[in-house]
Amino acid sequence: MTDRDPKETQLQTKDRDRDPNEAELIERAKLGDATAFQALYDKHKRRVYSLCLRMTANTAEAEDLTQEAFLQLYRKIGTFRGESAFSTWLHRLSVNVVLMQLRKKSLPVVSLEETTQGEDDTPKKDFGAEDLALAGSIDRLQLQKAVDDLPPGYRTIFVLHDVEGYEHNEIATIVGCSIGNSKSQLHKARMKLRDLLKMNRAEKAEKP
Image (cartoon, rainbow, N blue to C red; front, side, top):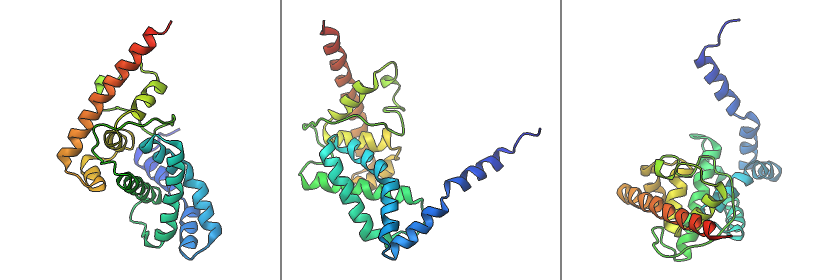
């Protein structure tokens, strides 16, 4: 039995990633087909909701923003040209919906004071994966609670970079800040996160 060419395997994987059924649904949805749009909603609603929940740390807000994101999708799907994956395009649209809501609530993207609480969700990338100081045997629920307790501005940058995998230049464009500011806020978010984790561990140790 001969070994497969790695490049051939990669190409086959990419072919599987291209969903011809989704492409057809998108084209039908552009023409106003409600059934096709519902199918797209059913396919992507969980991922959009997870993103909204991570960025807001509030289940009610995440549900409202998920609906708003798909309302925006309904209005703008005709502008999708297929230059990127549909899921990537929808992801960016959803991020913008959340950021617009934060601005409407007068919560600056770079906020130093306010905190909110929320629920647990599974990220597609480990929190703080690029920060070795956050590595180790940290309970995922404790980590999620600490992320939820970050000030909204810090949490936004942290989620976009360490959870969603955006680069600083992309975050700067999405959020409307400088690359240096994005890097600075990420550093402060990680420092704050470490402090919150220390507090959580201390509180846990004090319990009988």
